[in-house]
Structures are given as C-alpha cells and as structure tokens.
Image 1 (spheres, rainbow, N blue to C red):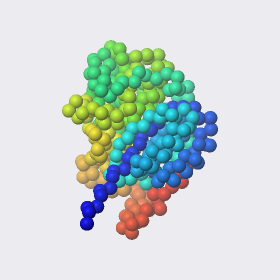
Image 2 (cartoon, rainbow, N blue to C red; image 1 turned 135 degrees about the vertical axis):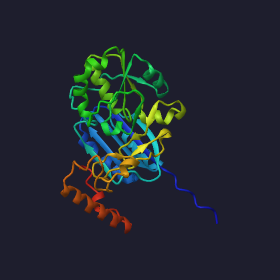
Image 3 (tube, helix red, strand yellow; image 1 turned 180 degrees about the horizontal axis):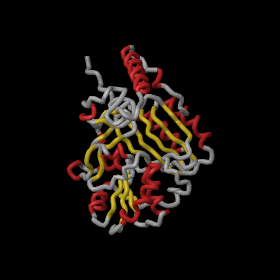
Image 4 (cartoon, rainbow, N blue to C red; image 1 turned 30 degrees about the horizontal axis):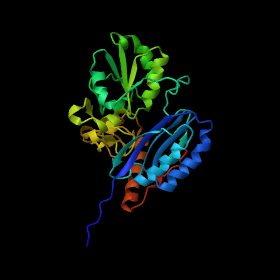
Length: 316
C-alpha cells in the first residue's frame, strides 16, 4: 500500500493596501462570501482608506480570495506577504468596516500622498547600523518585548494610537544628532502611517522597512540578521522566527499577551485565566468567567466540537 501523503502546511497571507474606497460597507458582504466559499479564515478590515488583514487557507483557496481583493478599486498592486502554518491559525472569518484600517487617530494623515522611503530588507542592515540613523520600533510594547532590531528605540506605547503623542513629546531628544529616521513594524502598514505622520511633522529623511519584519525574516539569512528574538503575529501562531517558522511563545487567553517559558512557569499563570502580566488587571469575577470559558472549551475539544464561544458575528 503506498504511503499516505503528508498534508501540506496551510498558507498565511498578510496584506494591506491604502486606496480610496467610496463605500467600504458595500464591499464587505461580497468579500466575506468569497472567503467563506473558499474556506479561508482570518480577519479583513475595510475602511475608506483601504484594506488590511491576515487570512489563511489552502494555496488555491487563498489565490481565489486574493483575486477577489485585487479586483477591488486600486488593489491591483496589493502587497501580500506569505508564510505557512502547520494548522489553521484562525478560528473564524471576519470582515469588518472600520474608520481606519490601522488606527492612528490622525485624520489628516494620508499615506497615498506622502510616505517615507522604502528600504529593501537586504539594504536594511546598513541603514540601521549607520550612527546618523535613529531607528524606531513603531509596534506596541508587548510586541517589542518579544523581539526587535538591535539598538532600536522602544516607544513603550500600548497602542499605535499613542505613537503621535509620544513622538511629539520626545521629538527634540530623539532627533538630536540624527540625520535620518528609520522605522519598522510587523508587515509595513503601521510604517506607512508613521512615516507619513513624520513627513507631515516636517521630518523629510524618513525611511521604513519594505514588507516589514516578516519580509526581513523571510529574506535575510539568520547569520546576517540584526533581528533579536521572535516576531509577534496576531494569530494562533503567536510568534514567528527567522524563515517565518513558528516561534516558541504561547498566548494568554485572558489578556492576549505573548508568554515565554518563564511566564508559563510563573505561579500567576493559569491556562485561559491569567498570567503574570494581567493577574492584577482582572477582577476575581472576570477570572472566574475565564475559567468557565476554559472549561467549556476543553469539554468541546474532547467531544471534537468547536466551542460556541469561538464562533462570532463577522461584524463584531
């Protein structure tokens, strides 16, 4: 009897495009239908400024959905970064309409008008090693804690919405003695806005990593890399490493923060209920609710079923 074929890893596509959608709500239902027909899961955000999201599925299924997206206004040159996952990294399919596809809270910023200079991953090391370059990690504090580029400034902001105020507050000390500013994020979308923001603030020599950390980890050999640690991703893989292989972190189901081995071994960690970072942020009543949710999910898994709490409205 011939040996059974090993199942191919699923593809994961991280994508975004800044483009003008006159009526994003009208695009939502057909896009959701395309995802569901193909069996593709993940989250896609639509706004008047464009589309953003990460989806996963078999290669042919993803290709069908990406063909649908590329047919949307201004999306023919959609930027997509592919990686793989050993199993489906999303529980459901969501297509949502938002005010922004990545929330900065600066309504006058338009990345279609002005952004920083794109830097290819293979040219990134030389730029950030230059002492005249200020290197800023534009991601959230819990993402930076997992890994970052050597020497990068950590704004220690809990949300991207906090970035403009942080930069305005620290502008003089940040730019002192620096001729260039280089910024990076996971896939590139936050840097589209942050570099556009700096340009609007009068900083012209602004650069950002094309394709983000994901493209750098894919293309730059580990022995040449200036990246330290792992990269947080917003799906069930939690983190990825060089070559975009799955990382070593797990996720706290209470606060959605990434947890390393030390956090998992801490007395304050209880699977699905709490971790050292959030133990003091939740009430006993909230933790009791999390514990019940965890119990119900375990029972559903034992029966081979999907827990009802994992299925939510796509517009939620």
